[in-house]
Length: 219
Image (cartoon, rainbow, N blue to C red):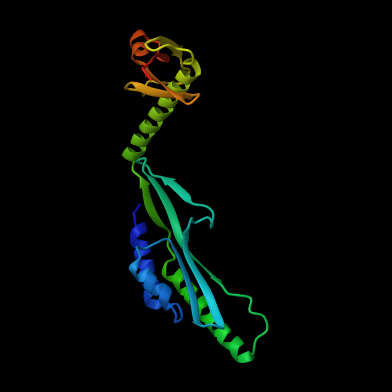
């Protein structure tokens, strides 16, 4: 699978700048100095009495509000996209024929260009979101965060009334094996802060893997 998301956005921006109809010069100048983006909004207003909006965006192949997540055989995570356009214009109401003709001409030209954009970029393209190694590392970080949160929750639930230097133990139902260091916990009550030091090391050594020892420290 080809990681061509950034390349496609660059090509899309360049195509729009080079081929857009007249009337959106300010937006095109802004687009020319910006980093390529996945959403382009152009207002075509060659005069104050006519106007048309063109929206160009990326979306998942199955629709505007979806995305396609793909996991390849190596465990890498990808997302798939396509280019889609929408055209919009104001409800002008009744107008003289010469004004209406100019409005219709602009709307037709912008709609034609929207079709050109979609024809120029018909293919699904992909973005590499996470490699397998990055996903594994993220899973390790998430597991550690959950374990630390479980230790903190257990300490806070059992720490009230402890004296400085006093220790307690509690068994946590969650797997705390990812915790590889001391966990410092703070509890606030009545404008005061109470600090505790928690460890799971003794539980590992004795085979009680959910056992947490903690001590109240000097506030």
